[in-house]
Structures are given as structure tokens and as C-alpha cells.
Amino acid sequence: MSPTFAKFMGAIALAALLFGAYSYWPAAQDRQPTIATTSTTAPVALPSTAASSPIALPLALAASAVSNNDFVKAPNQLNPIGSEGYAPHIDRAHLGDDPKSAWQAVTWLQQCAINNTNEQHFQLILDSATLPKDAAAAIAQQLQDTRVEGRRCQTVVAQHRALLPALALKAMRGQVVGAAAVYAGQVNFSTLEPAMQAELGGAIRADAGAGDAMTLLNTALSGKAWGFSDEERLSYLAVYASLGPGNLAHLKGLLQNGAITNMAPPTDAQKAQAEVAAQKLIDGIKARRPPA
Image (cartoon, rainbow, N blue to C red; front, side, top):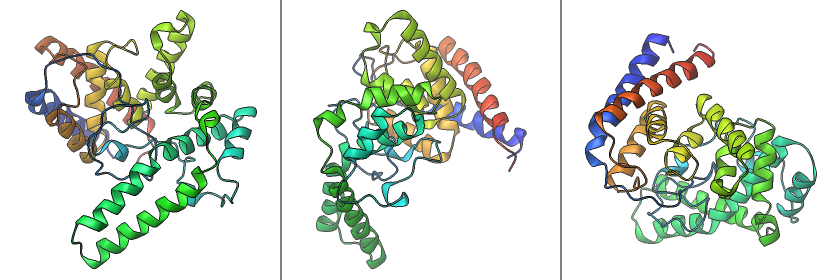
């Protein structure tokens, strides 16, 4: 992708967000952040749900924006895991010092957290919709894969779920892109020591600068909870939208459905500031990527 084309696409996304989708912006009221999962297997048509945990899906297409980490694969793309399930592998990641293993464990924990919802989702589609043969077969295969995943998750219990913050922190300190936002979603930022707040904020900004879609989206949806200004979070929304047409459509959907209720409608001055910051981030992201 040429720099000129990249800037053009960024400008389209910025204009659509800051001047078009802006008209859907709801009245502001701070709430706890709703964090999207890094799962690569979650469906992209889940119904809206309230944020009951830090890794709940925010709305329909949240799972379509996945981490940029190539080593995080869906379970069926890894070496087969037997009847022991994920539990002993998560335990080893916790006891070890490998950031990538820790991040893989985080991914498994997130996948297990939404697996039952995914299974219900696919079953509902098969039970309630008349689908073309090929589409029905594809959904049936997804349902089967989700059930296989459920068996791997059966050994994951509360003690493993409680390891998620520590695993995410280990991955973050190993500079795994995407881990910082997951860790932020697991802790109360305001109670962290100032040094830890600074470390976490720096890691999130580095991941956003690397173009990690989940970091951009989750930080933008965090409200004031993670210590980011409205202008910076607005710029992250614009950058998220610039990463592809699917992200832009998702963002419009979030606005139209009232999912962004943690930021006041931006003023013209805030929009101008966010646009400059977003374009700077977009230019940096494109410059880091190898030429097509």
C-alpha cells in the first residue's frame, strides 16, 4: 500500500467518524469499560449484552477486530490438546517465564469465557433460520468446533480464570502487542501505584501505535477508567476505523446502537485535535508495515 493511498484511506475514515458517524453520538455517561475479546473463533453476530465481566463482548461485531499477534491461533490450529484440556497448559504458562505462552493462555481463557455463548448463538441460528445448504453446513461446522472447544475448556476452573491478570501482565512486560489492554481490563487502574499506571499507559500507547485493533477499540471504550483523555480516545476510534472497512462499519454500528456512552459528544476543537493525533498514528502505523 502506497503512503498516498494509506493517507487517503485514513482521511476517509477520519471524515466518516468525526463528521458522519458523529451524528449518532449518544449523551455521555461514564460506565465500566466493555472489553472485546481477542478470540479468533467468536461469531460476529452476537446479540448486545451488558458488560458483566472485563472480557465480555461489547456488541455485535466486536470479535471481528482481532489482535495482530500472528502466534495467537485458534485452538484447532495449534498442536492438538488432549483430554487434559487447557488447564495444565495454563498452569505451566503461569509458572513459566515465556510471554508468548502467557498470552496464549490469556487467549484460551478468553475463548472459554465466551464459548457457551458462541454455542448458543450457532444453535439458535440453526434452529430459527432457513439457510442455504452451504451456509447451514458452515454454521453446523462452527457449532461442532465450538463444542470441541467446550470440551477443552471443561478443565478450566475458577483458579485458572483468576490467573488472567497475572498472565496478561507477564505478556505485557514481554512486549506482546495487545496484552496491555487486556491487563487494564482486569484491574482497577485508579488503585495501581503511579509507576504501574505509567507503565501500563505507556504499553497501551505503544500497542496502539503498532496498530493493534483491539487495543485501539478497548482503550477508546474505556471511559476515563484507564486514564486517557477524551481527545486521545477519540483519536483511537478514528485510527481503529481507518484500519479497514469492517472496522468503520463496526464503529458506526456501535454509535448507532448507543454502545459508546462513556465519552461526551466531541466539540469541534476536540475533533480537530483528535484528527491531527489520529493522522499521526495512522502515518506511523503505515510506515512500520512492509510495502505491499
